[in-house]
Image (spheres, one colour):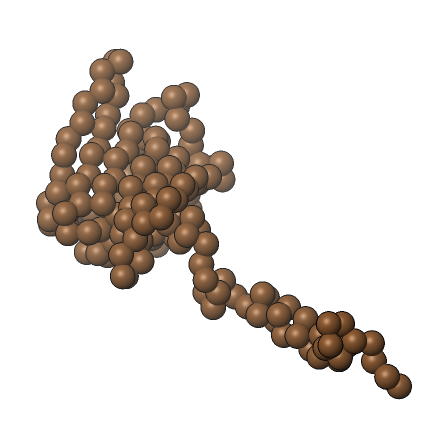
Amino acid sequence: MHMTHFHGTPMRYRTLTFFLLSISLARPASAQNTDPRAAAIAVADSALTAITKGDAIALTDLFVPEAVLFPTRTRDGATTYRVRTRAEQRAAPISGVIERGFNPTAMVSGGVAMVWMPYDLYIDGAWSHCGADVFTMVRTSAGWRITAMAWSAEQPPVCAKHPKGPPAPKAP
């Protein structure tokens, strides 16, 4: 039986090529070129995971050496901010915090990315506040790294708690 040709290529080879292409597209994301927005969001998620684990070293390892942090707080209509360097953040203890981000949005242009992520925060199991984390990143040879992190600290209804409700208590 003679197979039909397409541009001089036997049908069996086109079928094999299609099959191999399908397999390569079905590979896990880690084996494929990662979407830059997804990769930037993964760095932001890793930052919140490090905060929840109380690991200032893992958190600041996600930063460029010159990174700065801008925590803000709005009370009675007045917003204040502080400035913290990567070194200051690295030396600051983190304990008893559960910070959970949700519904992230990422924008990428070449070697620059920004992730906006609403979050809620509990300290020692008790509700503290919610707001938005904003991560500004640059692409380095090691992947996306945080150059600046700013966040708001507010109360509902200005911000929203995590859609899944309160977190499960941390294991001792």
